[in-house]
Length: 440
Image (tube, rainbow, N blue to C red):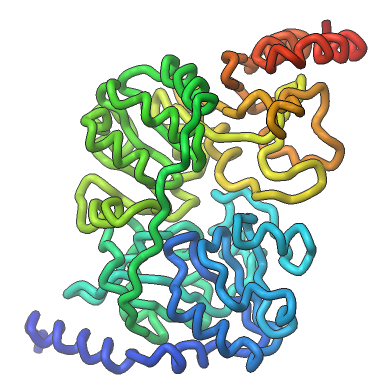
């Protein structure tokens, strides 16, 4: 005899109650030697990670893997790494010093390939801690804030602990976890971390205008994180029928949606939908995400796969860099041999734009650093620099002094175009260096 809908709902609620634990009980499911995976940014569960931090000396050889922590939890501590150690897929403000000093290890990878690396066992996982929305009537939770690699880690993990928070939006897409997959549930009501828009100065604004002028109505946009990408966004509000297929969903994109510039009507791939893999912004952004039919959150091997993202015609990708050499090689993740961030999704989306019919990829950077003392356009990258985007992939490079279009150009043409967008005070010495390299 089939169960009625009411009986099924009652059973789901019973299972929920059976799996409900205190935070202290939840962290006890972590075993010594575990590889604990935590989602990107706002998706990190603060109650669980705070409790783990408080009890960290009770553990041995636990590693916490994450791409971008936003809070400096107590376990991120050089004095207790034999108990709980952070391992980074990307270095941010919270973990950069530890990565540079060596007590935080860093695993390089393309963001898009991380789910496959979990599937193939190249990235280890025993336990997953993640924020989640309240459960729906069918027994599903949404891990909307950071779907990224977390869905793949959940498929491989021994233990999955959800931190259910009513502030987490229930989003659509491939970001749902069923109660049957979950080992334990803890409840918390901590307000979500909010991240405001970066400060946009005249340099960023000038770069933004150059890029915005090259973006056509009907384009599909990917926006990276930072002041320059957001400066581009602020100058697109007068455009029409833009679409969004991106990695990060933030307040800049929300501004575009609210201005009417984004309709997703012109998208030929997943028309009508905003596509992203993690969210980082304000409470207003998180409220917008909740049960919004125009938004879908998907794992990063879907959003960032160059072959899939490149199915969008007129895909425009905008990402920041640190240094570009005469060949167009982009270092976006280190200062020479000193690690600074990580590859993230930059290479994924540069390649996606190159595959896209009518696509354009923009690498954006100020012309100088150190208050104008150092040129970011250089003959060669600083020794030890990590190459994030290769010379074969780079297309447009933009500074506040103009645009250099490199794809299809010779080495000599590239050097000339890049010198033209360098700061005027460095152009003479860059020209002399190019002559010595037989590039002029």
